[in-house]
Amino acid sequence: MKLSEEQISTLFLFTKKKWVHWYDLQVELVDHLAARIEEEMTIDKELTFQKALDKVYAGFGLFGFSKIVQQAEKAVRQKNNKIWLNAILAQFNWPNILRSVFIFLVLMLAGYLAGMMIVAFIVLTGNFILNFISLYELRHKQKKCAKLLLTQHVSAFNVSYLFMQVYLFPNLFSSASLHISSPASFFLLMISFSVIVISFASKIVVDKIFNEAEKLYPEVFAMPAH
Amino acid sequence: MKSDSQLYKGVLNTIILKLLQEHGKMYGYEITKKVKETTDQQINLTEGALYPALHKLEADGMLDVTIEHVDNRPRKYYRLTKKGKSAATIKMEEFKEFISQMSLLLNLKPAIR
Image 1: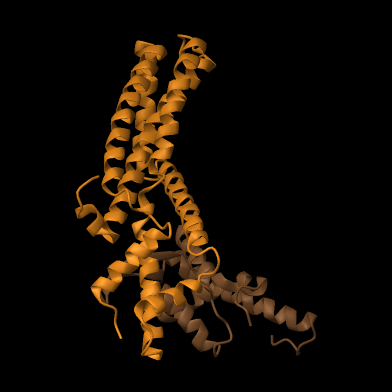
Image 2 (image 1 turned 90 degrees about the vertical axis):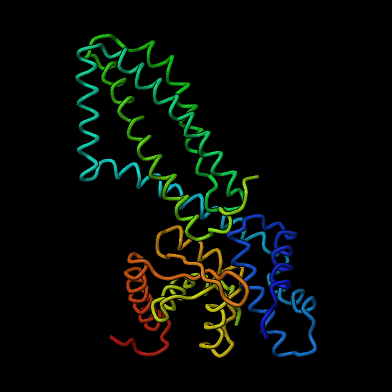
């Protein structure tokens, strides 16, 4: 016997009531509950949907879905961290390395011609503004699919990166010398280079995570933003 | 026999990878059912152990997921990635070696080499 659409909706509400707020996790648990309920109701024809649900949910143990939710959140954090790491490392792979080296040489040349302080100031200020805008866009995207666990924790890195930049500004410029060959200037150059590389990586990460989410759960993206 | 014993937890990933290697794509409940059937109802893979293991393997890049609509609901299917396929082969080899060593150590029967 197969469950009706109405009964499936009841199961979605049930998981929500049991503190499973992520739609992607609800999908998996609803399918599991439904498959087991169908099996129970096939074996015992007298069993009602509600009684079968109670019986199946009892099989999840004393803590119900809580352990599954907790572990899923941890797994998504780990997965997204790996995507971040791979995206940053990808900037040093062929042919991306060409772009990275080109950026570095342009920064070196600009630093030599115009002075390291000016170049670093332009790069860091420009990047700070771009980062702020992309964070705003990211928040908007996340609002659109707020119910998906897959797309959570994406902005955490961007937020900390933004704060890092705020912290770096006064410290960097107070220690940097105007001369291109000084260690402080070189450090400033490397920081400028890093923020550009991280910005490229950030674009890859956001695109990858949201494209995957949209491919798997197009129905969530079709809903109006909250 | 309880599936949540430490002994089974240690080989849970191997079981999942092996099943996916044999069947291509599977969904969560299908895996628990297959384990139950194959072991003649002796091993009951609990949901609390299965789903965290699946999510961890997915996070580690071993599994890929797709969604299909079946019987009025979306269903999440898991399949092995390239990394998962080689991990499945390695884990099976490791497990066979482990069984062989345990047989020797516990004097269960002569190890097959």
